[in-house]
Image 1 (tube, helix red, strand yellow):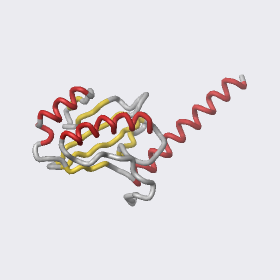
Image 2 (cartoon, helix red, strand yellow):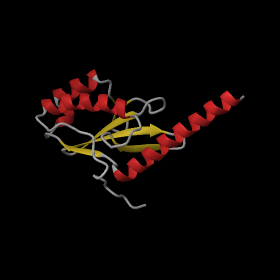
Image 3 (cartoon, rainbow, N blue to C red):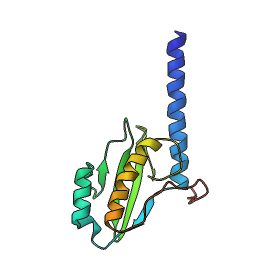
Length: 143
C-alpha cells in the first residue's frame, strides 16, 4: 500500500512539475519566430525535411509532429516570411504551447533532438543555428 501511494505521489509531483514549468514557458517564451526565405513552405528543402522528420500538414495549415500525450508535440506555422515553432504539451484540459528552445527542463532531451533536426534545415537555408534560450531572455505576456 505504501509503495502504491509513493508511486502515485511521485507521478503527481512529476505531472505538476511538467505543468508548472510549461505554464511559465508559455508566458516567458511563447514562440520561436525565425525569418526564413520567401516561399520557404513550398520549397523542396522544406518538403523533403518535413517528410524525413514525420511532420504532417493538418487542416489548420499547421505542420505537426506527435500528439503531445506521451511526448510533446511540435507545431510549425508559416506566417509570411516567418516560421513559428512551438512545443505543445497536452494536459487533457488544455495544451501549453511554448518556444521549442525555451530554457526549461521539461522534455529538454526530446526538444534537443528536434532542434538538431531543425538546424539541418537552417543550414540548408543558410540561417543561424537554433540554440536553447537563456532564462533571462523572457518575453512577458500580461494576462
